[in-house]
Image 1 (cartoon, helix red, strand yellow):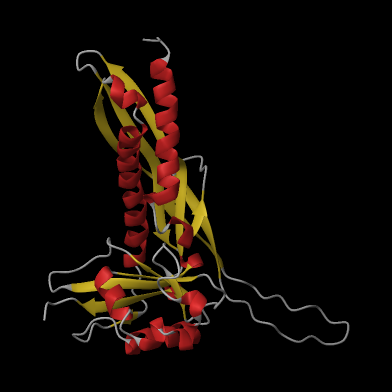
Image 2 (image 1 turned 120 degrees about the horizontal axis):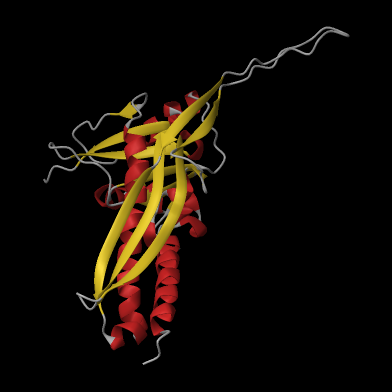
Length: 277
């Protein structure tokens, strides 16, 4: 056997983990503000208040908006996902087996990325739609939609709503959500394999990691992209080391990331009852 086969295996494995994370690891990273390649243990996101336009007299001074500037600090934490791989020749050359292990590590870190973002969304308390002992309904959606409008949250195609799979099923029973007569053929929920669709200027995404309390109340979140920040000092990295006493490689996938709340006015929590009938 070539003495360089380990290096080929390691390089290909690292590439496959990175590609798997980018492809299927995190659902939510691209739905929030993101800073990459952070140097240090934390990152700062700028928060700017609303400006007001005013008139001026002839030859007078242009009025200053006096915008309120503040910073939101997001602390980064290190996360690891490791596993052992026995030194079997077939594992080094069988692409399917290697990809299974690479995808498992990438998915674990991807779920952690989403967990951080959902954790930041949970801290928002300004706007909440009560569960009302029912699941996801059109009334709840319209209430949240009105709240965004009254708060002047931009309707610029950067709104996202993440719901549980139970709520996704309930949305599919709402005629306006699925009927092409209302939303057009291009926005039907099954027009894309990504299981996400546009409705009311918002991209709705089903997600399995949303919090549910002891009373079976699921928290769904409707938010604008600028309301939450995600920072990464290190995206997914992989270290593969050989351990002769185990006759195996140890694969360590790791990343350093964090997420935080920037503007709770840009987030609405929609509580939905999941109590079995």
